Structures are given as structure tokens and as C-alpha cells.
Length: 79
Image 1 (cartoon, rainbow, N blue to C red):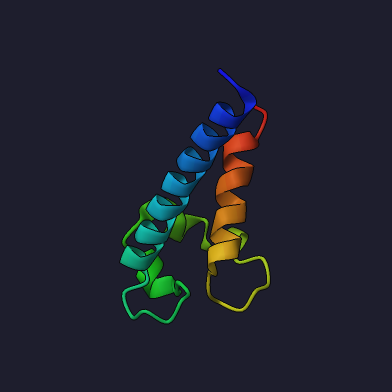
Image 2: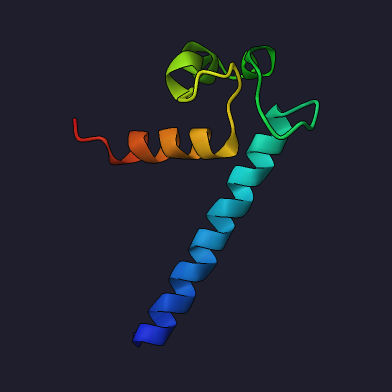
């Protein structure tokens, strides 16, 4: 596998992950305002339970950046 082939593979993989993340966010963001409020978060029990921890700026909403950062932190946490 060449460096270019690997780079193309990784770009495609990351693009697919971004697409899936955006689709999931849009599904939860039922009013389409670009953020997830506490009522919207209730459709996902784990998200609702961790809402305040994920809401880094304390504005009462979850942005894509806040949710993405929480997901990355969860995936990279060392047990």
C-alpha cells in the first residue's frame, strides 16, 4: 500500500464518519436549529444522562463541536 493509497483510504473513512455523525446529529436536532436541547437529548438515554457534562460552555445546548469532542474523549479514554 502506497502512502497515497493509504491517505485516500483514510480520507474516505473520515468522510464517511463525518457524514454519519452529521446525520445522527440532524436526527436528534428535531427543530433544526443546529444544536441539541435537553428535550431533544431525551431520545438517547446516555446523551440525556451526560448532557451537562457534554455541555462544555454551559449554555444549555449541545453543539456539534461539543458532542464531537465528547465522543472523541470517550473513544480515546484509557480505562
